[in-house]
Length: 437
Ligand SMILES: O=C(O)Cc1cc(O)ccc1O
Ligand SMILES: [Fe+2]
Image (cartoon, rainbow, N blue to C red; front, side, top):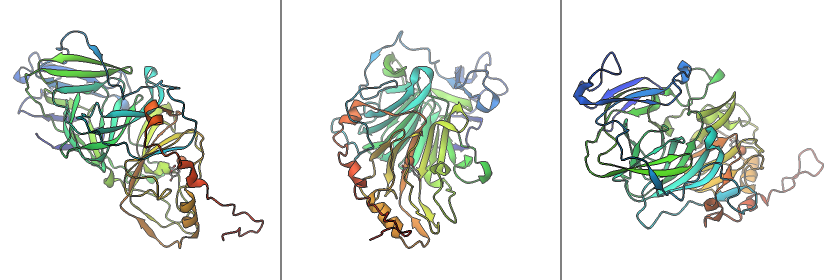
């Protein structure tokens, strides 16, 4: 299998797995090379403005429409879709979980998906869902596409080989990938059992944030995004195509693999990104900036500056701020914050938030450093210090995140999470210094 990538974000790419397979000078020749069928995959309305107009032309062994009649109902019980409100009876609060356990029975990527939260409404293409996946088996004759959303995958344990209609990507922890809405793919596990997080984006696609006064460079640079070259399989054995459509699942039989695209061109394509290539920009004199400076990708909502989803990371970086409380400040937020930890320690919570874990600080619920973190940062000798060996991330949305029953009843829910703030002492004693005993 070819694992080769083309650099750039949102480029107009072209690639062929056989010489001369890609028509030149036109999209729909009377007969395409090699007897391939031409098919357009539209990721935006035809008439979207140039900057957001996305489509690719696929040259394939059989057109996608060649499947066996209507779809039949299919069940993926762990995967929930918004609106999914009132699914549980857990009291409102700040929440944190230890990692979900690895499955014991054979479980492929699709079966291994469990929804933690949903937000917005899939029927109006607004909002998102967060999921975890934990899998130990390859998808072999099953293929999948999601009509509801693009998928952002964040591996935490083990690599994923994501083979899409447009080509194959291998994505290991510290890397992410994005699979466009409607694109067929299959997932194998080249390193064995795998676990990670998913953000399912019902709304407008993820794009790079504007950098404003930062200028043309740093944060996530376009050249570090990688799109796979064309790859196809000419497999003529029974296969199944599973479809997610408005929160329901469907299946149809195929006598062949749907990953049969020999050549393609266009700008509607999957991509991967190595999070360690993110160039963080931060406070180099004092204070703690808003975490939006660490936005890798943003999915706009239509209202300027108010994202449907921001994907934010907390990578290795130098902490140099003078006379400042360096960790995240205490916070109440109109946006809702789902956080995961890929490896290492998060500076606001040195204990209790472990790799593979989750925290959820929902709309307007207060949160911030735990008591130990506050105490340490308030007394620290503020020399330059490097935060090493760490990568946390946040899926932040303008919409409240509704918990699933699965998440509310998960054994790894930490019942004592709120006690991490219990020991925050009253320091106010009427003196200007306060009481730091
Ligand atoms: O830990 C969090 O909750 C995320 C977060 C990080 C930060 O640097 C500032 C605010 C914030 O909510
Ligand atoms: Fe926050």
